[in-house]
Image (cartoon, rainbow, N blue to C red; front, side, top):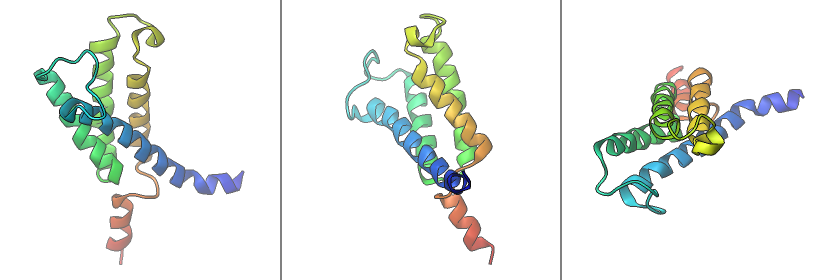
Length: 133
């Protein structure tokens, strides 16, 4: 099991990178309709969707490269909590029925990143290693 423990920082970085890419996809769908438009979102975008898209683009990019990860993850986690209660919760209390599982997973993965930091492969770690000499 000690061999697996050595991989934890790298797998944390993979979790951060993959989650950030998936989160960024929500912004690209809002702003560029890529890879497709979001079903049910009217165009032109309402102000709340523009704000959400900006949060997703900025925090997703920061988490992707591992810069200000804890702060970006905190803001993104809050956005996902708000999204769950504004969009999904009023449909049903059960996430599988209100299609809110993705928002909940994003929220708690981001909350974990707030506590854990970016992992091995990040600009934060690269900066710390060069700034120490």
